[in-house]
Image 1 (cartoon, rainbow, N blue to C red):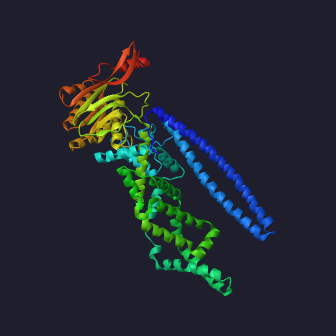
Image 2: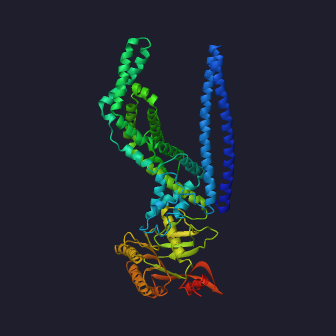
Image 3: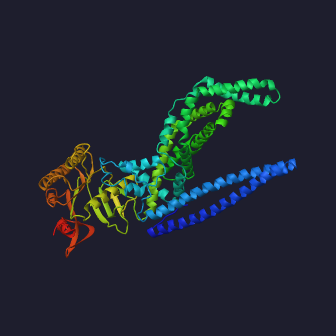
Length: 604
């Protein structure tokens, strides 16, 4: 069912209503489970009664009656398991609705922070708070697979510059955003299965193992002929007891054959049995994906990738999970003796595994890549659904950036102050001046994060947004390193050098700089900042610099066609400071450092 939400009020009403409906459904299914539990107990007691109370007196009727109760008992067990699975899914859906209700109020602490992706040396991710507590990643992330999580992190950390790819993603995200119930089922299903971060690596390592049993004629022959012979002998020994010795010899021969390969089979079992839940998870998620007939190019391509010959990825992975479950029977010692002695169980399972690897193994990584991409697109589709006021960017050659009502996605709508902003051509630079806490750094992050989101194909926080995709390079939060014996100033210089080297190599960069050369004295800072800005302009850098240094803003006179001055102003009335965070043309006229120090009692 297609679902479109137009306002935040509608969104809150949707999740509240969904949460209540799911709560009612959970109560109903719990009631059914209790009723089935009591009925199952009653049937079990009747079964016991017919076995011990009826059969001794009326054999035929008692046998028929007990058989009926036994069938009914197992039927009820099956129904109970089905309802229990449904309850787990409903609990997952309810948890999702509750989390989204909190998330639209900007409480997203329940979601993964992606802190493992924090990289202070990255071109922009550290400065932009892409990862970590209260990050863009935590706001966005609704992935349900480890590979999907990594795919989302990579998408945010590596700009997509290809216009066609971005527009295709936009199309896919928009289509998925209208299938919210299916996306919620997809996410809730993912929570039903525990997936270890190492599971996928274990499966891929297992797939890479070379065939052994299917290459050995000995094992192929004994696996094919001895089990049928033993089964026939078991039947014949009922009538011909002299065959019993031959049966025992073959039984022991099987056990001996299996013991010779025990180390190899134990190793195989250890590798493939651990990720069993993950296999079930992948199959379940792909099955949900395969049920839909998508229209957008990327989603159609993903679906086509998951079909291999006459079978789908879900069917193939389900088959593998069943093989693993069957292989696990060897862990029951009593069952293992008979399975190995009669059927050569380890050999049979190993040959089936190798056959699966030969037929399907080469497709597995492609399946997982497609699942991860779909998982990431689902995350961005949920983001779109949760922010109906956001718009899809329009990709242009010029202007580089033209946005109306541009805001930061990490600031709640009730607190967000939006601004219009334009950079028309490559090589243009904007200098933003303003007092402390006036909003300069936040605005730089606002511009950059929206450009990053735009290049993922996601909607952005603006009423309109036209841009040209460009690599982003920032210098805002440089830190020193005791391990590398680097001072703050040296670390900042290294970052500036990296940026200028790329510009000298004719790379087109969108540069965002916040208060250059903070690690030196004011004279050096001013001279150095001017020199650096001259170099950036000389080699065609495009972007924004925020500064307190009003002298730096005078460079506009030198490059009137390339430099533009904008500012954030403050209001000071009776020693009180107020901020409106609105971007204005020109150079700021008011600073507030001394006044803030007086208000905090630092100076009197």
